[in-house]
Amino acid sequence: MMPLTEILRDRRVVFFGGKGGVGKTTLSSATALALARAGQRVLLVSTDPAHNLGHLWERAVGDAEVMLWEGAGTGRVSGTELDPDRVAREHLEAVGRTVKGLMPEHLHREVDRYFQLARQSPGTQEAALLEKMSTTVLEASERFDVVVLDTAPTGHTARLLELPTLMSAWTDGLLSRREKTERFSDALRGLDGPRRRGRGRSAQEVRDGEIRRVLEQRQRLFGDMRRLLADAATTAFVMVLTAERMPVQETLALHGQLRATGVDPAALVVNRRSPQDAGEFLARRHEAEGGHLRVLTAGLPEVPLVELPLLSGEVTGLEAIGRFADLLA
Image (tube, rainbow, N blue to C red; front, side, top):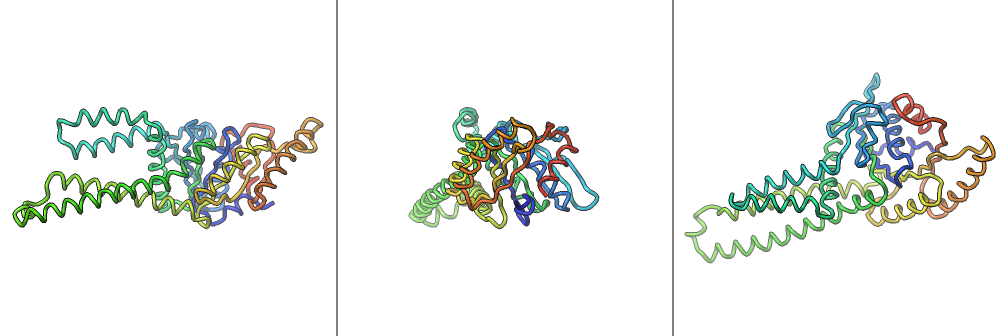
């Protein structure tokens, strides 16, 4: 069984995903520490609304980067939590300010009312979180060797990873329609002759230019993120589970969703594997877990499998995270 750190060698972005409660935050934190101990600069990012990162490291972690561990050499772990509610609110406020800057003042109240309603719309939080996550990951690549992402439970993560392609296609469609509108406007200006062309840009043309700039910026962002997710040499997705029926079934489904979006999962990590030689009760659990794992490996024979033992104590604090990290190297 190859160590997880060996499987992740040379990857620049590592996602940890899976069913809620299987230990994604613990595993992503331990992996970040193991990579940092090897001399890498690691940014640990949580997109899980549960906000467990700070509890695990026993220190306050928020939207600003905080130092979680620093070695004697170059290795270090910085951490940040992306709060979906806050990200959506700040995103809509920023978009609202841009829109109001393009609209007459008497319409500003209507713009505010629209964005208040938009905050409750399905998909708003996901789209805002995707934009923030994409910006964070792409900008961090200039300052860190690896970005490790602790993601929300399975369904949310799968949907989030579909969005770069969906949002990119949607933005492409908007730009295409704007190009048609601009060509039509150019034709009208031509009909109006030199007198109209000499007046400079109208307020509408200024707004159109700003809208195009924003759309092109988002197009580049989502395109870059989509290419990053599909690059197996750079990006790894680690599926975390326990050896039980429901987590195994969710993992098989998640694998299919990831492949459909162009993401090739790098590893399966089975957490809290019961020991075989610690009493009859745990021995029976070990045997039952083995049956579930046979289903898993039969369905995903090509994905490397890593098994981690059930530990006697809770993983909380730097010392405990360090012991867990030892299991990954």
